[in-house]
Image 1 (tube, rainbow over the protein chains, first blue to last red):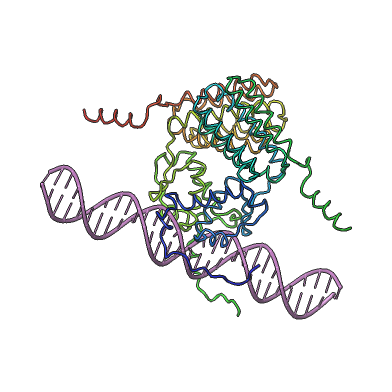
Image 2 (image 1 turned 180 degrees about the horizontal axis):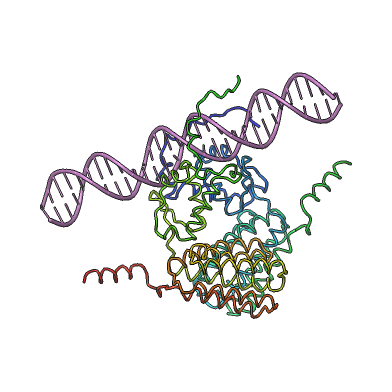
Length: 249
Length: 249
DNA sequence: CCCCACCTTATTGTATACAATTTTAGCAGT
DNA sequence: ACTGCTAAAATTGTATACAATAAGGTGGGG
């Protein structure tokens, strides 16, 4: 890597970032968290990638202090893993964690969809239909990044509409993490399938068929999980040994 | 060039908070988060209290940088609320949030207790029995602080034993937040009652009676919520007007 | 030829310095 | 005397500087 010290004294004297120059009224930390999260969800940062503080600082034009705050936030969401005195790395979820994530989602989303089926308004259904159109567009355009983000947001959107903000927030975290899992153990063919299942789900809600909606949601989550290439219960050590054995030859 | 230690370590003698030797295996941020969390859960810091950065820094013997990291962590757990350029305050949960918290807990803990009833080992039951003894001791001693902590930990303990670490972590957050709620809208009489219900719950698990266990858990959570003096749906504005009307007289 | 100790280097952890904003106290005006 | 503005103090937001630690490279020894 570049040992040259590319000094970047381009930092503003001090104080707040560029302020109102079109950027945003949001806190800069918040902005950075969102940018990195988007990069993770859209698979521009692969699991295991190192997130150096100085590198990020130069990219976003802020000091390490601000970067560090953002990294702490991301670590608490389990999207990145902080290794003391080592640095921040994109989390590589273990198979066990992947299964637990989808299990937790089934527990929560079963209730969410049941309630939403009872309370959904026409406007909410229209919004979800719009969302589904966007999903289809991203899939048709082959934009895997946006596709993965939208497929996850669909679930969060329903949870927010179901009326319990606390549950919606929990689910948002779970969906983000399981998106990371999907990217790790992905099998690409499942994409359009997911969107079709979203469609069927909405249809059941429109018919106010709670039983069918719950069943479709559970099947949907089970399908997504099953389409992952989750190693049975193999620990990373076994994979390592296998890799080394092959390398020997 | 030999990097001799000729520079003066200016601020190291600031001294650690607890003079205990050698326990600093943990990160200092982690320690501070736990200390503040304990203070919140045990009601030594009331909702609405301001947590100034310099004050905390002096208390714990660290700089504002470290304090700020801890405050960010606590804010993400919703235990404190950060108001931009204003400071950090102990969260004052609104009635709506309180109801949503207990609703979320019912959704999750129903499943947790059902699974635990099926999988509980003798050793796990013994550990829970020990925990219950501690609860009783704290109640008998009139130690409200420890009591509240233990009453919450009971639920988290069961979730951890139920085998899904992700769900257990979600519940830990919910329990912490609902403990804060309990302290705000408390009605003290419910304490021993909770412990009795924990006892009944354990009994159902011992009998492997999943249906009873689920029912007892739901009733338990409903009781805890009902014992709160949650204002109906009054918004703070209404409370303010009422208060002013009374003050006028 | 390989392995180990030491040193160099890069990166993280923490403290301090400075800028900006909010709050509060003081003052003038009506 | 009370309300509205202005300046000083306090507090937060951000940047930089310094200390500690882990990774990597080099030379010497087995």
